[in-house]
Image 1 (cartoon, rainbow, N blue to C red):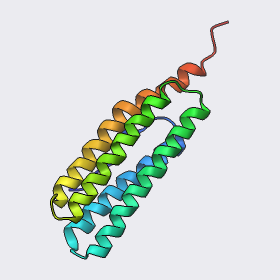
Image 2 (image 1 turned 45 degrees about the vertical axis):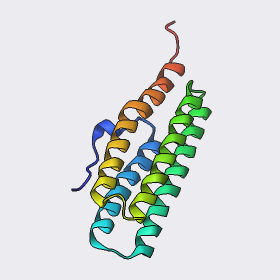
Image 3 (image 1 turned 135 degrees about the vertical axis):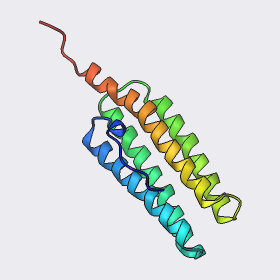
Image 4 (image 1 turned 180 degrees about the vertical axis):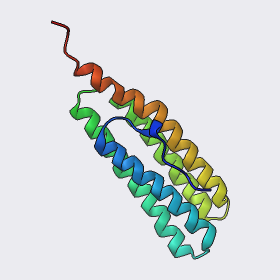
Length: 136
């Protein structure tokens, strides 16, 4: 089941949209790898890439939001912390054989789509409001 990029994932900031594109590609690579190999080292390395990329992306996104003086960055950071904990637990479950590849992919797709469409778009939609000039 290939996860396809949708226009609705765009938040309107090129650097974030590029990172989100990579996330979609990474989810697809994880799906392919988990369904085609049982090699624990390969699976572990890919799960580590997922975790580290999520960690990098969240920090980058928060730094961009801070540079734009957006409100609610602290609350967004808390969501990111919770998501990293969920990812970490799901990775452990996949590696221990307690979570199927399909369940992991479903989690990643639902998490990515939901967080991007609802949380990221809400946060970054405020950048146009904070940078709008009052009518003259």
